[in-house]
Image (cartoon, rainbow, N blue to C red; front, side, top):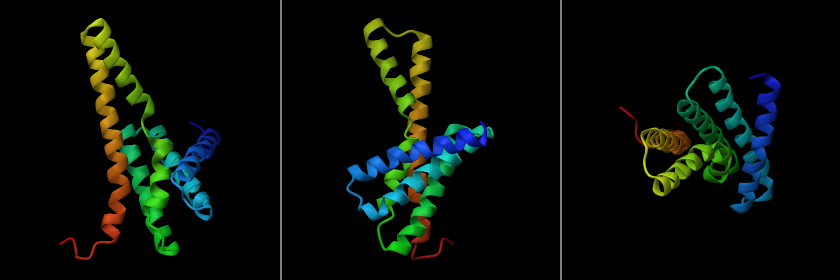
Length: 153
């Protein structure tokens, strides 16, 4: 993956981030931050995947990066970090894996379960669960660590 396509994909990923921010009634003065965070997260995930990282770990690192950025912005603007973060991780939702899981389940109910079909459904379903888990933990972890009142040790 070259730098031009990575940059283009990141810019395109900012569009659904801003769109979902608008759907979540984020004030207009914060929309550009949602788009920037969404583009940054998508670019980090794409870069890590191009370097050979699995999609689950790349998603976790990208979501954690978005989390740290939104913690910083929330401290500067006195707005909750979820205002930026939730909309910013929307472009990284594993839609194709979830879709293939559901289609496989429908095929299994209509045509019967075969071993390759069950394997495909299981792999896609587990990938979906791990990616969604990586998104949620990665986004929440920076806020939990930053706003911690007691020391870890």
